Length: 495
Ligand code: FAD
Image 1 (cartoon, rainbow, N blue to C red):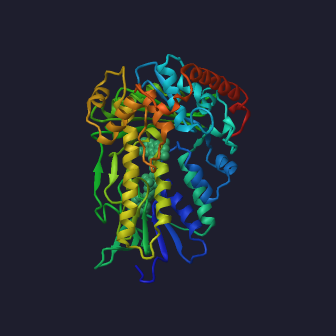
Image 2 (image 1 turned 90 degrees about the vertical axis):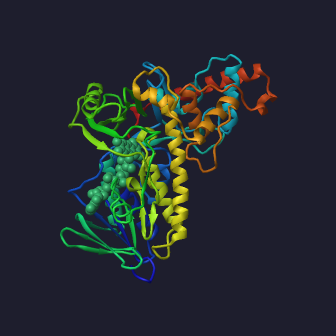
Image 3 (image 1 turned 135 degrees about the horizontal axis):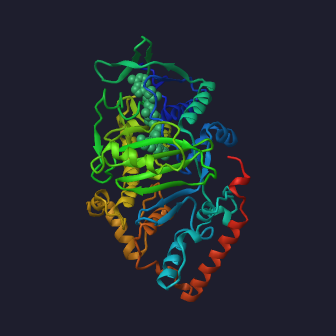
């Protein structure tokens, strides 16, 4: 490592994390005289999954400067309006976690209290009927949110499904065009400074030596730099998130593409179904202590909606987080920093979040203990918040008798989550911090969808009488249905 500050940034890994980081860094460092080099191994390859995103992806595409039409074309992407959770309250049950907000524009959290009150007063009104995004998803319609805060269309939200391999290739072209140097080869040795322990260079099996001042570890689950070299440690969260395996199998494209991910509860986990332009992404995330790998594979194959295009591939993981994601002059981004299963499609968001933090805390010298501590603290909190949101899905289920689901209904949960569930049940309030990724609408969708029923609401809304409130909700339901009917169908649009 040179003493003149960070001149050479080296990224180890060319999966989604590596190329997202390279594309963002090269753009942010433009003109600063700093160079970005990425090393990846074709022989090792990438994890090859990670197809569903959440709306924060727009931030990333914007800072990198991607053109949406080109991005959709190049990555064979489709629009995603949310997630359908099927079978989480027993066979035949389904609820929808939509992006965007519920109710009319601008009424935000208070609207949820109006809805709770209407129901406590006897009104039969479905949660999906008060979300324009959910209605659009169910009727295969799509429009982008508008900026006009008076329009119902401002309550819409969307993200994408895309092909992870094509996405990495697309970002690679983008990053290389802006000056990122790519080196192909398997890193065999890692050099460290004899006194500081900072990493100074990587050498590939073929003998290429890549020296650097700051190293970004995007080497996947193994964490070649952060763990195997610097021993950061790992917090295992499998007592709350028991799934530790996934079978993934691409299938033929479906005749009609739906604008949402489907997450279907199964005997020892859940299956994902992700529509892309050219194929369907399928997988089964399961807990190996409740079902063996062969049985899980057979379960996935039996449930495929279209013929498989390849043999299922097994991925093993440990849910949790790297105890320190920045150690000395190494910052871990992507799977090397930890993994939360894909139930709410949060890993790509966490990559972006790592990149955003790195840009905000970019060190003058690679090794800066105070910046590292801040990076870790904020990332750890974000991962704990997402962890709690995921645990909620497993904890609050009904109607499934298999051992995994019985275990989850009885398992002790983090106090932070128990507090949120209790508060919602008692007062209709969703207790969030300003940094929580998932906001009121998302927590409400899942709490409500998984059968947690609030017994009270915020009395601030009582300025209107009960009858007026019911009338308001009925009128809103009709306005949303009317607005939805005017949205263009997905079939009439490309992408
Ligand atoms: P990888 O893809 O594993 O890439 C690691 C890179 O490091 C590769 O290029 C490899 O060649 C390189 N490398 C490793 N060792 C060496 C070495 N010695 N020398 C040179 N190069 C090396 N996320 C979402 O947001 N949405 C989803 O729907 C979603 N679904 C998922 C489903 C499953 C089952 C799993 C397991 C993950 C899912 N994810 C999802 C997470 C998502 O796949 C990852 O966050 C994303 O792909 C980033 O992976 P990565 O780049 O960190 O690691």
